[in-house]
Image: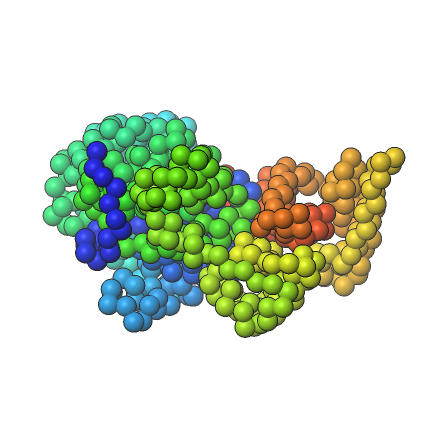
Length: 545
Ligand code: KIV
Ligand code: ZN
């Protein structure tokens, strides 16, 4: 084993691994995550600061909401100059914006249309190739699948010269057929061929062998400078290991999601694979262009906007990733950090993310904090956030830290002009003798009418949700998830609440809110989830590849 080595600037090594981020597409397929266009743009702007190469913004044909979100990301992030002063070309040009499309004319057209505003764009088309998908989902022969893939790639190439093809469930596909279809996609003009371990079935040594053999069996990959990519799911906890083994065997693109979010056990975690490549470039002989000090900020933004928390012991971005509890470890780290640390915390942005404001902090300091957290607020959003910050600072009477400022901004950004319901006021009465009772007043945006409802429950939140349901007369909504976490420290810390509801037609939506009053935040989060269920046209199962 080699020794941990100090951080070396990327440009000294040559940057050869393309980081393709799919947080906004595959990550957003996690149950309960429903990002609207504004939230996707917010995250995409942060991904651009992180300097990922490709941002997969969504699945344009899945719903009008997905189409609009991809278009918004293409317009805003796909045209923004990142760092005009930089000598590095990749830091000046906007990231490539990608959209997913089934191997179908209408999907490919929708992807092309939604991506058109971006300076550089990629159509990512896919088709299942394993026997099990072929038999139960496609009901097609291998020849028909081959034909469909070729037509899809050719059609996509008629819109853009940057086309990615994915044989879905590649790792359960007969290897000979995989060779045939990848070769055919390359021949048809695919510039990237992505090998998805769709169900997280691969083991590292075997996956690496397949990547190597694909290069050996298909000379056109090298001849046409086609990028072999990998897209690993984490069902066996091997997504990062499989991706690294693929890199060792010639893969030049890795598909990732921030915090590893995604279907089931999720996707390959961006921060883990990026730091593994950077930390062990001595063994991998490869590097990437990711601006790693933005990792922590990105992770926390995605966590707040999706309502998916990050476990404390999560590699790289977990709260404990750089904490040392044992005396022996503390002693070692105080003497020399390399005794127990293989990465510097500043290289993943942990230290840079500490901002502390107080109740006397003014607009200027708050603006600086907002900018440093990576949020791009309109003047109106900024004013609203500032008022909420002041309320929290007054309620706490003390300091407001980075995570609390982030929670305030994110929860404030949950209300939009399209909201069907606006929480006006509430009272909740609890005591030891009677079940909690709540009265809630909600304004119905369409009519302007304020409707009042009351409810009881076995807890104050339950009673309040019952009262909201009574006020708006909603049926067929089940509360399936409720998560409260303290943001910041101390008894008066801000509580961040994520509420997930399932509506009777199958959609799942997560609402969020954060204040120092946990019951108030819970009611607001519940109303937010209901608003999202109205606002976001969700997709059916066929759009969850
Ligand atoms: O997991 C998968 O197979 C996918 C493809 C669409 C690339 O997400
Ligand atoms: Zn996937």
